[in-house]
Structure formats: structure tokens, C-alpha cells
Amino acid sequence: MDIILAFVWGMITVVYTLMALVVVQMRKSVKELESQIRDTNQTLQDVYKQLEEKEDSLIRYTDELHHNNENNMNELYRYIDSRFDKFENKVINKKEILKG
Image (cartoon, rainbow, N blue to C red):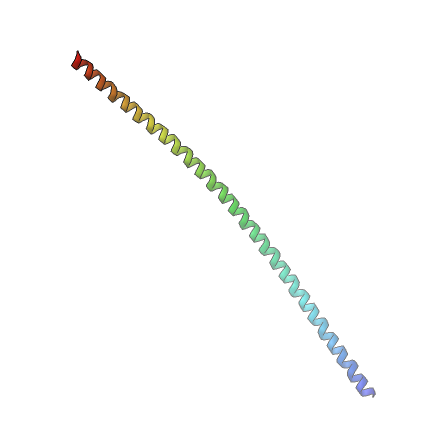
């Protein structure tokens, strides 16, 4: 009976020791995973911030292009209007000469 009891206590000790080792290894693995999750989260936040900055930059660039396009179109309209006014004046002067 003593031998069986000693064997059982020995087995229980081995099982508890193995369980303690498994718990320690699992805890270590969990800490490593937590660290990886934190690093991944930080990387995602950095990427998101860069995307926001890029989006803002593209919006500013688009606004600038739109403004420049408006300025160019206004300048073109002024030029066309000026040329048309000169042409109109020439036509009116020629009419007056012919009537004259």
C-alpha cells in the first residue's frame, strides 16, 4: 500500500510540475503575443496617420489645381474678349470707311 501511495504522490508531483511548466510557457507566449499586438497596433496607427496626411496633401493639391485652372480660364477669357473687341473695332472702322 505504501508503494502505491508513493507512486500516486510521485505521479501527482510530476503532473503538477508539468502543469506549472506549461502555465509558465503559456504565460511567456501570451506576453510575446501581447507585445506583437501592441507593435502591430502602433504600426497600424502610424500607417493611418500617414494616410490621413497624404489625403490632406492630395486635397490641398487638388484645390490648388482647381484654383489655378480657374485663373487660367479667366485669363483666357480676358484674352479672347480683348481680341474679339479689337476685331470688332476693326470691322466697325471698316464699315465707317466704306460708308464714309
